[in-house]
Length: 83
Image 1 (cartoon, helix red, strand yellow):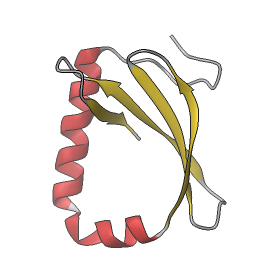
Image 2 (cartoon, helix red, strand yellow):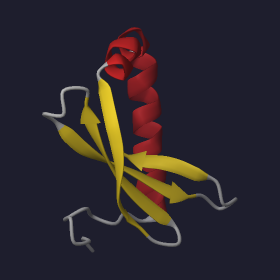
Image 3 (cartoon, rainbow, N blue to C red):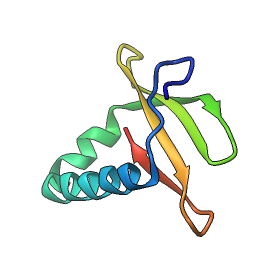
Image 4 (cartoon, rainbow, N blue to C red):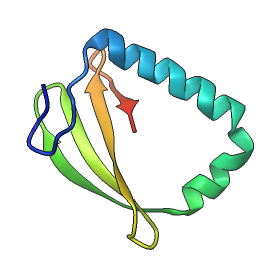
């Protein structure tokens, strides 16, 4: 089910799959992470509910933005499940 911004809500299983995929991606591209972080701009809150928060992350020039979705895990910790 999509929210007002069109972001799809994912199930816990999909969130875990996405987190695992990003873990692999970041490990394989660790040499590029510094460049990625240096181009990071503002992060603004788009929506939130009890177990999910969506931020919009822009590049430093403010010309590109994309959602970063956090969800609570079974221990109540916030984890990035998609971006």
